[in-house]
Length: 381
Image (tube, rainbow, N blue to C red; front, top):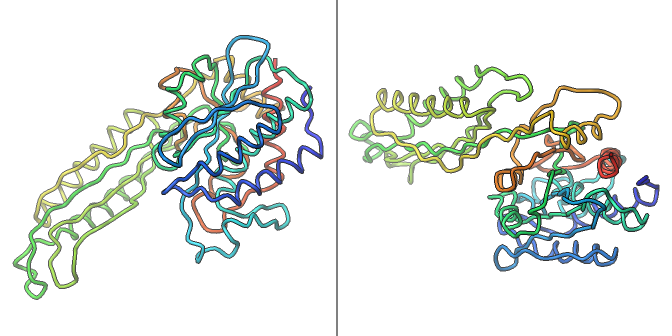
């Protein structure tokens, strides 16, 4: 039985703090520094590891602990974080400050605490001389926050070809997800005609249809209904750019949207709304409209009846049966599951509500729970 001692808890908290103190903002990435640290931890535990290069200064790390039976379970976490403006933080992003039950810092929830849990489980397996039922593979990736390219190189490396299940330790707020929503990014472009700002009637202001389009699209998205077990398709107007100078009628405007879709049908409905509302906006204000799909990844939904998925859900919810759900966000699963054709479970310390914002934190209590949950999963029959 894999036991989580007080020593293990102290170590995983310290690991989390050490990882936070190593900057790995993406862009630019530079994950080699944190990869060096991770490999040092693994080497000290007697675990061999390999670097999977992405580009200069950027690598993922893969390690394997042999098990009794064929096949492997992949424990996956990413080493990079989003960027941070220290002026917006009241706690330093890289100091890993402790305050009560919280550790503050960039990546505390997303997802250096998850990486720490993976590393600690690996150390405990070796320390307690436990041979897992299947090989345990650690896949610690670069570039998750930008394009999942680190996970893609791991999936293509041949090092995880025998994987039976993918366990991703992203922050889930105590929930266990068996998949994730799709990810659709679209740029809507509005083209008008430039003119002197003193005679705007001689031009076509591209910002006006862009603004109307963004508002109408948001209004329509608010009416999209939830699907049981998958939630509702969401939409965020993430960027709006237009104009070059205040005294020139803008000849171009661009709106970028991020939609998280629950099905292919929902994805098609988003595109229908984008096209329809864009053309309606230029019909009202003039100009031309076009779109470009920047990112289009389908939802991933594991079969709840799959034995590995059942094992995952029992580990997360040992005292109750729950209706499985999918994560509202995207993970490295988009680069691994389509290549290997395996089920995925997503569960980890912290909450996604803390990610990508100043004063990000993770609760120490959630790290303990995640460590205990992963121990149950690794040792499950």
